[in-house]
Image 1: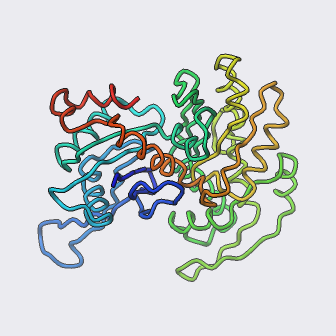
Image 2 (image 1 turned 180 degrees about the horizontal axis):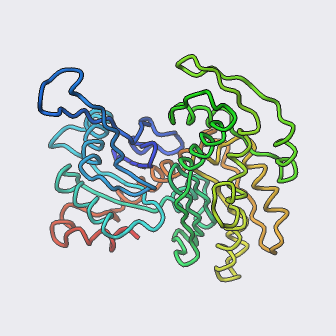
Image 3 (image 1 turned 90 degrees about the vertical axis):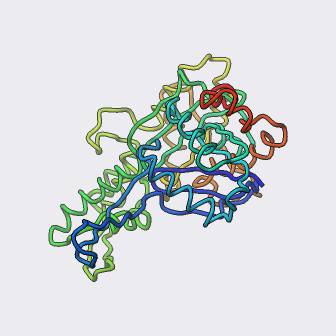
Length: 360
């Protein structure tokens, strides 16, 4: 059976292609590599180093990526050496050609896969909700991708990619909590958990301003026993997506960015894109985010007002977190049986560049 891999900056999602289900294997992309300093082999000479194979959505450390995939495919999914199968990878928006070529080379030459396909995450997220045209807003750990998709193809000229994401929101929360809790020492892993548990979006900008001055405070005990107070900070995270100035950026808010993206597409496609806007990525699951997004859209000064697609009832509740993987599972059931993928023979004949001809 075909394997689908959606490798993000924070989490890697993988599993055999079973549409309508969440990925069975979800693991951190970051790894701990234990190094010996060469002097003595004891606890004091061993150092934990955090390795990040993927940065801002793109593979940057290929040795680490090979180790990660080896664990995923052989240990996690039970592939047998010498009996490897077919694999579909999800591509972030604007993936460089060199990365696509290096990935297909790694999979055929090191992992001996029998077939390969890659598809863009924006397209796959639409497939997950039963669409082939629309606009995806993907808020990941390391980037935000806005991709208008027409008939299953990303309109690249109108697409927008921003190298900010959940990671930057975590840093913002750490900064704000540090101001209000100066005596508490915070680790980023603790802040990440606080963000996931407490962060939410205000109803609108006016409500946000009120909450800054009149917000219920709550105490939270950290794993090391320290007690932290969190109040207005929980709203700053969501607001930063609509007011990037909170992150120190001179940029439009996320709804305005989407409107600009759609407005640069031919007007005959506007309605199709507007009525099929899809939010995806873990950060988009923040409490109140969807309602705020919809409200900002309705208040837009532009004639273009995006409308969010509700996923089908038979899809998993948390589809936004895994929509690219789910869409990949749907697509894998089409491209591999119909021989639309890159085969080993294709690769041997043409080399890594074949990926651009077969995977659009």
